[in-house]
Length: 247
Image 1 (cartoon, rainbow, N blue to C red):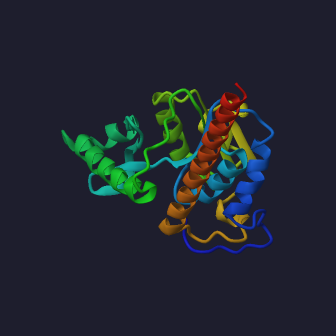
Image 2: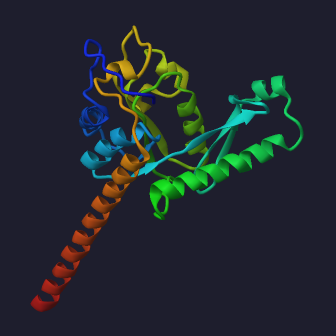
Image 3: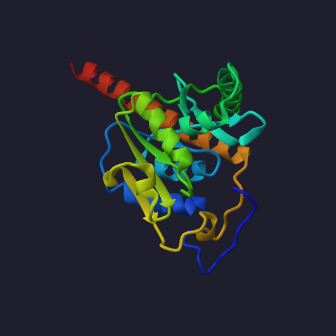
């Protein structure tokens, strides 16, 4: 997200973790069916970590890669989103204008999926991805600017079988809900200022998140769930032993 930004007069959040804690408290007032947090790296991961911790639910990342136009990689012909069955979302009007050569899109998709796989291996360190089919996905980032990445992610999760997707962000422009095209109940946002210009101006500390921090937060979330599962198994074994002894 760029270098550190310090704007004390606009800042509403101390940092991403503070924003995540505030957002988690709001989300804790709601009920979700089989929820998990999918955070958009890097900036969404510290926010998502706090939500997953308070709600005691899994945390994973969702990677989105742009399909760049020939010679103009910043011009998006579409995007690919990771998952058990990666999804390709196309911007048909851009494709019609650019008219990429035959086979270009397929080759660009393969290249971006390879980069996604490499990145996932780096961040998840061999852990299998959290399944989304039939679950409520809390899709988290540190804020919304244009909403383009979120729109792509929402389409991909719907295709992947998510029962419901709830976009959860600390800050977004007032137009965000219309940009995303989702129901108001599927959008949780703490701050939507009319003078919105950029996400970073609402954080006192908006230092770029490192890969090392992302890996550490994902490791911590996985260890938390593993510890709870071990405790539940131990409690179950103890209860079973007590029942056998009583019998």
